[in-house]
Image (tube, rainbow, N blue to C red):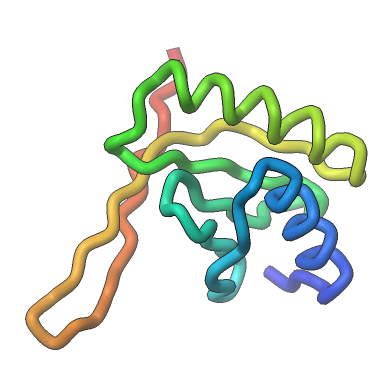
Amino acid sequence: MYESEDQVKALAEVVRQFGFEVSHIHGDLVFVSNNLFILKFSDPIHHIDVYFNEDIEEERAVELMGMLDAAATEKGFRVSYKGAYCLTEDEDGAVSVEFFDLTPE
């Protein structure tokens, strides 16, 4: 999926509103400096999937999701809480991300 520089800048601005910074961008993933959540560009491109670190407390995730939703809407994005993730590092130092999508009820 292609993300324009303007879209990434607008999303970084949303993240900065809450005292966070974009630490890394890899493909369609936007990593936040504190490792609380990852943003993923989805289809359509103005849609953002949000994955919270598996260690975050549910209350904090709900609070952050509400703040992200309001700020992202102002910038023309739509956000959806998609699930959790964890980062793992192998013996060679390569980092991988494992996503755990929410199961529809």
